Length: 193
Image (cartoon, rainbow, N blue to C red):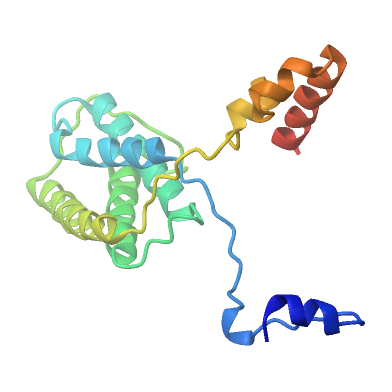
């Protein structure tokens, strides 16, 4: 039936029901701080160059790697799957070294004057590190990472600083300053809500 005939014959209300096949589960988009991944990778990889002769340098390398690795494991949006076991094993190796070399009998941090990592300790740490890096790089290659292009003014910086630019130029020309300011303030509200 053509649209004109349908319009002329219709005299009631229309209630449409969604097709269940068209309903998709809505999911929030989460921002991942890529710099945190870079920092973690840099600090963890730095364990390969960890000093066997300088206890303070070694201690800080271990602690920084441990904290970055723990933060990556806790990042809910990262959802490590393939390398989770290797990350936990690396964290365990780091904890063993910190416990054996840099903790006194009372559980307090202790930086010894005479310090040496045994070859088996270095091998164990580097082996765990190698397994983690291999699996982590494979996981990142398969990670769904997207760049979302800016659409209109729907960019936080634009909403905060220039929401009125969404109004076409010809309309802005005839808008009062009060209306432009109201539009600007509304954009800030949207950005910070």
